[in-house]
Image: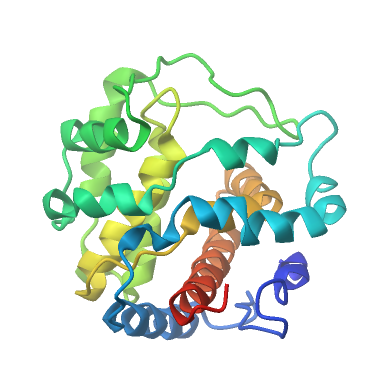
Length: 264
């Protein structure tokens, strides 16, 4: 987690809030909840697509390029992602905005999520098979559940009760992690999961949708995200995942504030 700090000055020119695993998780998540609520309450004349393609084609990619060596060298040889492909991906925030009405309730059927994923990608999503869909990474093989078990795992996700969690973000992030582990579609799981996470944050915090660019910042934190996944698979410990996600959400909010203020 100490590597998080290499990203802390890339878009404000000065140090921003960095959440550390040395802190109390509940206190830190509640601090971020207040920030999300404050941002959602801001009235902005710009349409939601102000968090669209220009983010990927300008500021965020520029900063990734500046730190390309630091960013790319954290991936195993031969497994480095292409930054160029990020230019070609449409943003999910303005698309999800148009379909937000159906997703304000925290319980989503598989069919409804499939429709959302199809809208995000502009074509019908195909449910994956039970074959491995990723190559081994760092000696870890990712195994997905059998198709027959997906419905049960989905029900388990929807059975998470918000009242069982001291932090609303803890509830939302656990449901986000549930979806990633189900890995429902052959592709498009990440963007669909991030859209559902935004819907869940809005539901749990009783706020309007916080249109924040989680995609670009998740991509910037990819080495840390991957490391947290490996940690979960090898030790069943989710702690690193939670802290990485706190920083991704926080950085997305910081950038969104700057978008609204016209600084970017």
